[in-house]
Length: 526
Ligand code: CAA
Image 1 (cartoon, rainbow, N blue to C red):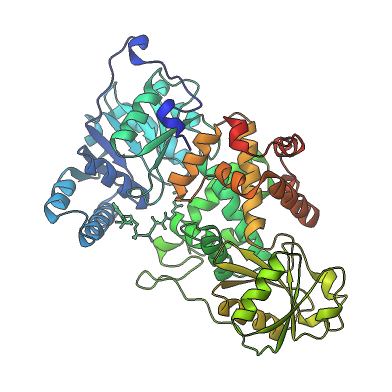
Image 2: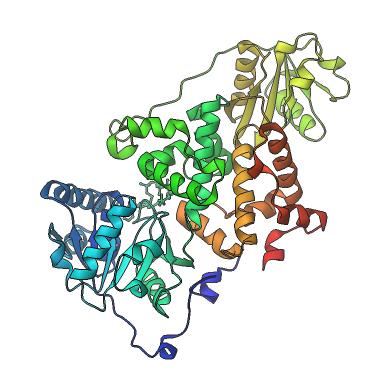
């Protein structure tokens, strides 16, 4: 796929006039200030210093400063331990960073970026202070995840020189920087900051000032939805994480990622998204509030959804075991025939039935109903409804094993064992539309289509942002073209019918593309 950034370095939004048309000299960024040296700030300082810039790291007090220095030493230490950097390079990198508790030391910086907590009053107070301290030509940048850059800029006397520069966690590794321009930004500044991001080895995507920008708008809806599904009892934390990681090839499952991002940050981003969108799916899940209130913020506090002892998350427990003499398979060809062949090769006796006539599987020890939709309707037509289990194969590695309200633990355990024998990882879940993976994936794809349709960002920029910001193997439009628009549309309809969640209804653009017989959304959106 073409990377639109190479054709249009500032993306879909923002003044992009070459500087010679703006009548001013291009800025040089050699000394940068980073205010706040928590996980993100320290990562950002590392990125700047690695690219040869001088960095002034600022923290509120000596203890926070020592913690920030510690983050930098341990992060670069890991790179040295992997043999990717020499100790001399590490020393030189750290030598380019000065540490201070005095903001006044930022007076000579060419650019100052803040990475303090996501609270508007704190940010506005800081920017007012930076405006007083920094030289007139300095650019003030915010790493806010979702707050209004315009509102932050308005706290200064130089709103035209305020920009969003949004890095992703872990900043030294994730390759995306969202550059956020406002309606008052100086001509050419977004392009200059995008150029700076490129100098740091990052890929910039430039967008306008909307809550959550591209990535968090799409990501947090999905992460919050995972919390809601967990709370609903559809599946467990570990099953959902495994399903999304192995089923879709994502680098992390949603709960592992929430712990990495920080539950406090995630909560705040959801709040901001909800305030703008009024979409119930952005309203932070009660579970998030409870964890945040309890101080369980994720990795940074040693516990969130998982507990981190020595950096390892807790291990999922094993399921029950049961023996199977005869397995029944219900499903259409070719899936049922393929499963029959696989079970046969693994030494199991299996029989197949069409959904229209379940007689051949009536006496099987377990009945596997291949489906991505609820299977309870099939179960109640069997003499032993407790023996029926839904099975949905996801990619090459995962099988969702769905228990109905009637399924016995023995039958579910037996099917999980069969799944293991077939070399797949089983994901336990309830008998709900689209089970786990598609229930989380399709609304995310729908949101991406809505974002495209709103004109906020191009399909290429959205794909780039999700691939490089979250390490996804493919962007949403690339995924849509692989899965097929009609299948996603039908899945969304099923989700809407099940949950009656208004935002699960297929986006009008998706519906229209399917109706028009358009097979690939990227071909349409180009
Ligand atoms: N500097 C340079 N490189 C570093 C580094 C550092 N400080 N730390 C790690 N790396 C490199 C490692 O050397 C390694 O490189 P190779 O693979 O080439 O050897 C690579 O980064 C991966 O490191 P690890 O092996 O330690 O870890 P991993 O393979 O388990 O991957 C991960 C970890 C990169 C975090 C991966 O799981 C991932 O991409 N997760 C998704 C993260 C994500 O979605 N982030 C965005 C969150 S949203 C956000 O941040 C925005 C917001 O506002 C809330």
